[in-house]
Length: 64
Length: 128
Image (cartoon, rainbow over all chains, first blue to last red; front, side, top):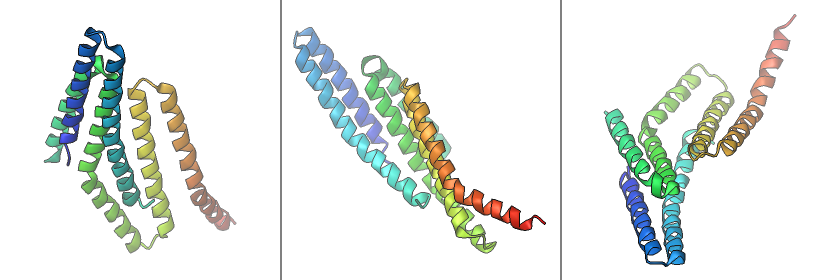
C-alpha cells in the first residue's frame, strides 16, 4: 500500500510550518499565509484522490 | 502477520500527527485521515473474503439475495458514516460528527424498511 503517502504529507506539513515561521520572522506575513495555503491545497489534492479510492473500494466491496 | 504492520504504521502516523498538531493542526488531521484509509485498504482482502463467504452461504441456503445485498449495503453505510463521524470528532467538530451519524442512521432505517415490511407480512400470514 502507498504508505509513503503519510511521510510525504508529513514532510510537506513540516516544510510549510518551517517556511511559515521563517517568513513570519522576516516580516512577510502574507507570503507566510500563501505558503500555508499552497501546502494545504497540495495535501488536499493527494487526500481527495485517496478518499475517492476508499469510496470506490467500499462501493465495490459492499455491492452498492 | 498484517496486524504488526498495521500497529507499526498507526503508531508512526500518530507520532507524526502529534508532531504536526502544534504547528499545523489541519495537517495532523489529514495525516490521521490518510492513515485510516490506508489501514482500511490493508485489511480489505480479509473483508472481501468474509463477504464472499456470506454470499456463498446465502446462495447455498438459497436465501433471497435482496436481503443479503441490503444487509451488506447497511454495513457499508454504517462503516463510512462512522469513519466520517470519527474524523470530524477527532478534529473537535462534535456537532458535525453527530449530524453525520444522524444521516447514517436515517439512511440505514430507510434501507431497512423493505426488510421490515416483508417480515411483518410473514408474521401476519403466519398468524391464525
